[in-house]
Amino acid sequence: MERQMPHSIDIEQAVLGAQMMYASAVREAEDYGLKPADFYEERHARIYEAVMQLYKEGRTVDITTLTSRLEDKKLLSYVGGVDYLFQLTQKATSSAGVKHHIAILIEKAHTRNLISAAQLIAEEGLTQSSTLDEYISNAEKAILNVTRSRMVNDFRSSEEVVDEVIQETIALSEAKNAVTGLPTGYEKFDRLTNGLHSGDLLILAARPSVGKSAFALNLARQCAKYSALENRGAVALFSLEMPSTQLIKRMLSSESRINSYKIQSGKLNNEDWSRLHYGANQLKEYPLFLDDSSVIRVNEIFAKCRKLKAEHGLCLIIIDYLQLITGSGNKGDNRQLEISEISRSLKQLAREMEVPVIALSQLSRNVEKREDKRPMLSDLRESGAIEQDADIVMFLHREDYQTKDAGEVDTVKVEVIFAKHRNGATGSIELAFTKSISKFDNYSDDM
Image (tube, rainbow, N blue to C red; front, side, top):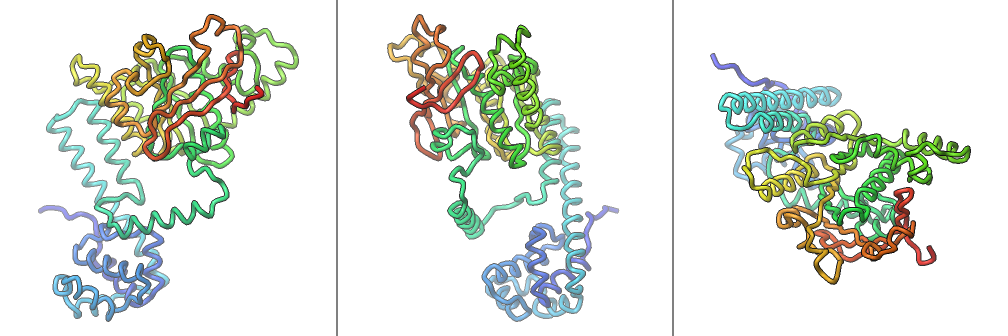
């Protein structure tokens, strides 16, 4: 005999009945995030949907108004008519017990969703329709989706989304902080972007030795510093070229403003040691997590970020750099297709993790062949897919980079060019880069 999915018709009836009897029962359902899909019986889902429509319109929810609404939607006979609605009121739980019953409904709905996910995982494994890496990644994603308490399983109506946007806009208008995303600490950067926003993929590109890795480390350190103050979660930094000890040495140099050569060589005076210990204690407080795997696949990045988010929260992901990531391996020798898959996956990573993702990228040598050395979108290596998937494309440009005395000046002006900005303005800003300590600062003309 086929086994039924976990459910309780009695509890579903008790909750719906209570909502027609007590206004507080409707509020409790909304507060707990109860959704129509959490009901096992379809007619109960349709009744609950009508209840919540009346509630959001500010109307009284009772047997009369609910009957009228279901009639308007031509669903009254489908749910069992007025007689069935009256039966529900007879089974109403008390206003005090409705919280417990709603929690049971949500728990059973999650259990059903987990069972369904497990069945799909088993089916994919039995058919062997994907590689092992893809299979593991799909399984992790399926389970993670179920564990999210407010996952959207269906279309969202324009009414629901519009209300959400209006409320968000009101909150932003009342906020004292002009930066709506994750602040970077660079005033002009934050002014142009309004901070780093969840779900965005940002590409940071430059020719070798211009300072893109140093800038990424500065962004990681400053965002982690802000997150420590606001409890926003961890910053995940994937470095495929540099070991974690070298990354920390660079960050210590920036944080303590000690020449990186001194840290590398250990030739520090008493004042240096004092500043180094202060910088080290500061870095220890930042929720910064490093991964220096020299070879890593996209699905491994997903798995590590899911684990980090579950354990520590997550506010930013930085990857240095995109062209070193290994794809799924099923694109043959076509590297351009593989890069397309990787950039698309990084955009999906930003949306799934609900954080901004910054991926560093190489530029082609075309920029060196032009008289004007300022980077353009066409200079991105394998540019088509990267440009399409990115929400923001940033280039670092240094006028001194081409001159013979470029190595003689320690603090130089760096231009950050916003060549693409899907949700805002393009343009450029200036930062000051002190090479000896790998530090980027806000730029002023008197520097």
